[in-house]
Image (cartoon, rainbow, N blue to C red; front, side, top):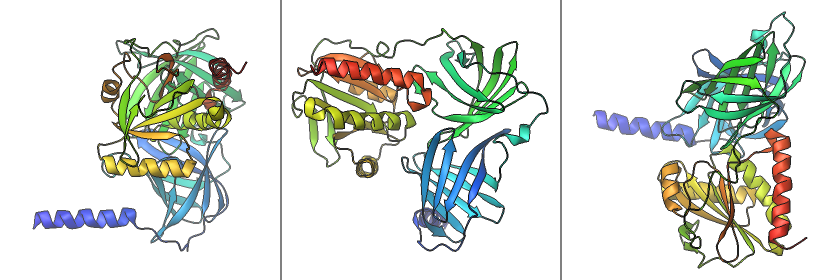
Length: 408
């Protein structure tokens, strides 16, 4: 009997989470709302949400805008899809409030984060409002995460301040924390981000030019961080973190989305430059990089650039992951070769590319010449949230490609 009840429960949950309808009886008020995600105890991450009409929301992280389109209702619950990630918002609207949850379908089980919200013109972290004048935050900080660990993670903190308003990001050797938005009240700073894959909260206290704080990520991760103003600080070179340990020509073999075996270099054309993009559709930095690579492909493919995307996804259900990849390909009109690499374990991914010293980041890119020799590698991605670092990366990439393709 217990086994039968368990099966019925699973069936009912599956029916609930997969069913949607197209009629809308609930109309949220247009305007600015603040959604508060309940990440952990004492860790509430507020995010700005603009309601445009009955079926469209915009999540704002500083200058980033993520448009969510409602796909239907279940009872009084409105269901909104994220455009880039396998995730949903499920919300119950009231006249002046909203409640519901964020559901990350990539995670095992029913992985949800509860949230509440209200229609508001207040500042994002208004509950921490202070009468004290906001302290001035410098533009660039030398940062360490997890300072009590044997090997703290180095980072660069980049900030822009306008009175009480604060925006910025943290750049690490394996990627960046994308678009953060928040406030400064007295000597306290607060930043948050919610993009459909990650939900972040940063808190900090500034004393004598040093910021000490806490970082919360989704439901379980928490660590400390410290930042010291240092306009000259830089991280390790992303073109040197991943490198070849085997001088032989590069080779690998994976399935494409139709189940056919793709062997490099056997099934590849001998282009002057081929980029092997190691990524995952669950990874915001990978999404930023893919958008940039789409632009490069459109401009340089006919001049000799080829791109091969190898995706490593959550879980080990190959058919489910390949369906997600097909949806991703079709949604973003990706014209270049897409392959399924397997599960998103860095140890597993490293085993698939034994010519390298290891894969330490999603994304990682390998640049090959026409003979399959490695020209260069790049670890992580400094996306548009990093400002000047993103612009420098693009300029360096343009110069490299033009030289490699002999376009200068």
